[in-house]
Amino acid sequence: MSKEEVWLKNRVGRITASELGDIMSASGKIIDGNVTYIRCKRWERRHGYALSVSARTMDIGNENEPMIFEWLKANLGADNVVYSKAPELSEIPFWVPEDAQYFGASPDAFTQEQDTVYEFKTLVGNEATFFFMDEYTPYEEKKARVLKEHGDQLMGLFLSNDKVERIILVKYAYQRDDVPADVDSPLAQWRGITFTFERNDYIDSIEATRGRIILFNAMIDARIDPMKFKVGSWSVKNGQLYQTLPEEKKK
Image (cartoon, rainbow, N blue to C red):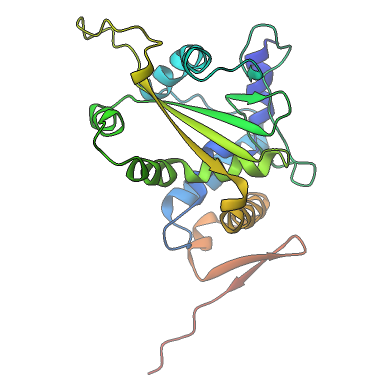
């Protein structure tokens, strides 16, 4: 099998950092999107493979990852940084915690010591490009949006490897083939903006994410109609699922 095929196989049946948004909800309750994810992972664990998903946005991101790494080297220096899809690597890194074999994450790039991870995000939509590349929009406002959009994945990257102390996320405005006037170098400094997240600043969020992962792993393995998870609240104790039903309304 190719490196890509091995990487995809490693992901099958596992909850991954990039999918954590699918197990979250603003209320903390189980919603329809969560139910769909449970069914998806049950399929993978039963059949041993995942169904293909085609999304142009995802394709553009994958196509630009090597260029983002080149931008990183050109503008920030990356002598000690390993690109996960570098040809010289024998495999694409996929980090699985020893105490949570049902979870994993793939860093886009990382330092050799694995204390710093780099996450690459290509700006695809015009609105997002205008927002992040506007020099007068406050940096903290941009960082807050990054955390809102990608916070679940960032917490998952911290959980995947205890060595990770910080994550540097890069938002990158790629060179548009459909815009003839876009002739600036793909390595131009203006094309990227970085945001740093330190583990110590997100301890509570990391632990909350860990709890949600444990809960959904149990739900995926449970022989229960996933729609029933929408009723009441659920918890896991000693590997067992428990349901707490809402009290009946007083007459």
